[in-house]
Image (cartoon, rainbow, N blue to C red; front, side, top):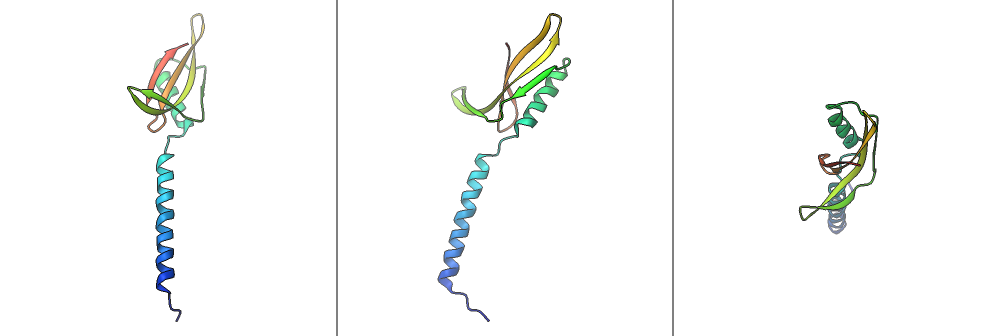
Length: 106
């Protein structure tokens, strides 16, 4: 039977716990909704009021200030057909929840 050195065991356990905490912190900080899902959600919202011709989204979120607080957002755009050609819209969506925060015509 192999004897386990108590000091080596404690060092290994401490290293494992430290690694687990580091991984958990990095994972929780990067828990953004994938941009593709956000774009699909925005397009589905627009489609409730008519067809969508085109769309795009930035793959990397950027930080903006909303009501005095920093928020990570995806920025993107939607175009839809209109009577005098396509109408363009830009949007911002919360990267953590996918919630549409702002839409404005271009």
